[in-house]
Image (cartoon, rainbow, N blue to C red):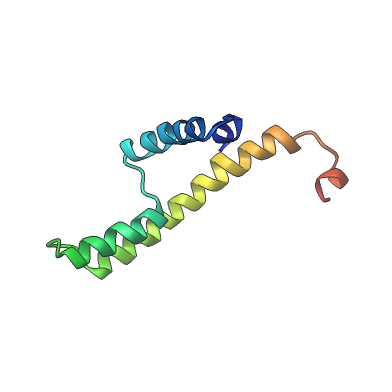
Length: 93
């Protein structure tokens, strides 16, 4: 997001978001929203050995992993950068 906001034109924004997304996919991380498309599409295409029970388990664990990742990496980083060391009444607003 920060890279896309820093870009001044559309091509720069596209390039800015392309490489982090490509790295995320290349490392094999699951994203629950992406899996909500790919797994039913695979079931409807008739991929052998894949059923709705496998899909629901994947969604559960991918969702939990996304939640932990969001809290650890996104929320904690934002807290550290913007709210750490501020008085308590200033953070409540």
